[in-house]
Amino acid sequence: MYIDYLYITNPSDNQEGDDADAEYWSVALDVIGKSRYPDDPLWKFNNPEQKMLWMRIKGTPLKRGDKGGPAKVADPFGQSTTDDQIYEYQIVDMRIVARAYTFPLKKSLTIWGTIGHFLGSDVWELEGSRFLYRKEEWGYYGKKGTLRNMFGEFVHWEWWGLFWVIFSSVVGGLFTIFLLWKMYWWIVAQRELMKWDGMEDVWENMRRDRVAEEEGALLNAHGAYRDDPDEGSSSRPPAYEDALKPLPSKPLPEKPLPAVPLIDA
Image (cartoon, rainbow, N blue to C red):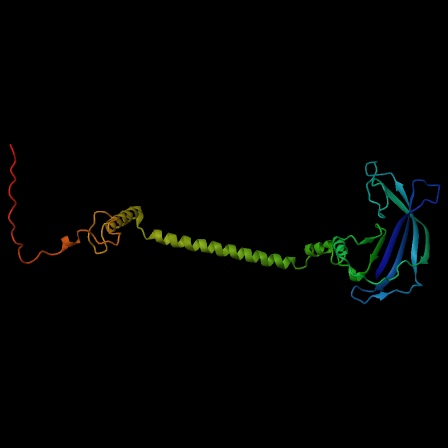
């Protein structure tokens, strides 16, 4: 049976003088709805004449532990001032009283109320003395819309297995492609090295390539030789281009030689 309920707990005064160390709590439970299964519709118990269960509980602290000392166990009612005691509980009174829940209208939350709801500050009401459970407001790990419930759903997500299978497959596929790419270029490099027939041929080809490169640097675009490899890089034509023209067919006219200058002895 799944029920919606209001749970109320408060410390109570010690009315029995025979046990001064005992503590008392008043505990009430008001059932406000029920359903047989989680997916069944809720049957609301909104009759104001309905009663609720009220109990008076006595807690007697026991001074004991595993090694003879006090055992640190939290008080389940959250009202004890000490954390080094465990209690022996006893129901000393039980009765049916007027119900405490009035089925108020649901109000929209303010900005601060929304922030408090997200942090879970509205789980317990009136300084931790009232706890209201309604199935429609709660998830598996806390109230819906709270950080606790979101974190629980994230950690216990049912598709985590499939996610990690897909993620590992993608990473493994990329890593395999990277290895195949490296292997391909390694094979290409090995085939280039196999073209050389021994180290002597390697050095000979390197020397031949270097000589051809130097000779090519000394030839201009027309295949003519130049002294400076950088010569001809400019767009200006060479200064002695006319010297390469063929000689004329007719002999040049003879010119008289200049007179021999007189040199004083």
